[in-house]
Image 1 (cartoon, rainbow, N blue to C red):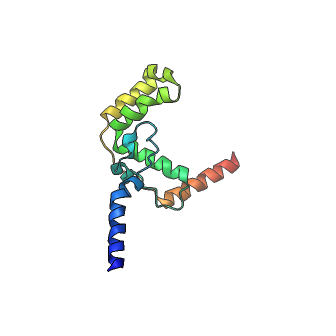
Image 2 (spheres, rainbow, N blue to C red):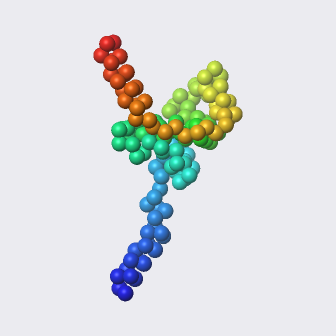
Image 3 (cartoon, rainbow, N blue to C red):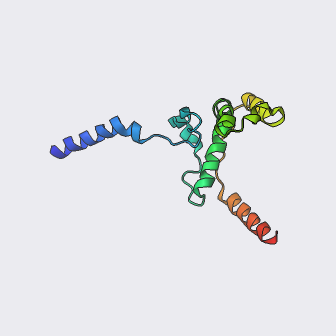
Amino acid sequence: MKIFIALLLLLSEKNIYGQHLNIVNSPLAIYCKEWNENKFSLCNTGAGFTYLNDNEKEVNYIINLVRTYPQLFCKTVLNSYPKFTKKEYLFNNKLYYQSLMNELLMLPQKQLLLPDKLCFVSAFCHADTDGKSG
């Protein structure tokens, strides 16, 4: 009976505190804490692939966030990026920055990209070969 009560307390403690321990650490959270919501963790499709390094997983995650939530990305990340990086001149660049913002605001939601080991190995081989040949 004591074990049952202890197990019950442990499980209920996990439910009470689990939300605090299970916070998603989105790479875009530096721009807006909203990116840490659990629904965005579905975009982290590279998380379980051992052949990807941490940078590659993060790039995959960010690309999927942009593809899936282009308007939110535009309003939170792109809107803050010039000030955050001290590159305010970007706000006035109609050719690149403004056109990117306009495009993202109109872009429909896209499917998630999934890592593909065969493509990864092929790209790695190509980069390695071209790197050696100059």
